[in-house]
Amino acid sequence: QVQVVESGGGLVQPGGSLRLSCAASGRIYSINAMGWYRQAPGKERELVADITSGGSRNYADSMKGRFTISRDNAKNTVYLQMNSLKPEDTAVYYCNCNLLNSDFVVRTYWGQGTQVTVSS
Image (cartoon, rainbow, N blue to C red; front, side, top):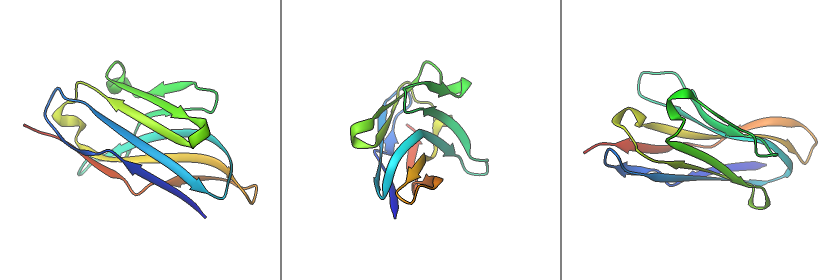
């Protein structure tokens, strides 16, 4: 089994910052890309940012310059530093891991999500 667990969400005022973390554990052979998606009420899930095992980063246009994705390969962990948060950033944030499990099957795993609320 593989577990993907997010942490770090919460309530923050507009203009504030939050740092999300996501750790993958279990029967993992290697991890390819790790990323963050978000889903606001009544909207489809959308990509926030992702990062390859080599460190190549990809951001959604609306997050560029405000959000930074990073990862610690030794810890199978990905981070999302969110600055200058806006009310429209309010959403459930999901971690996504594309990995080769110990059965040598490539699969994508999702975390359970963490709520981020930006409000005064």
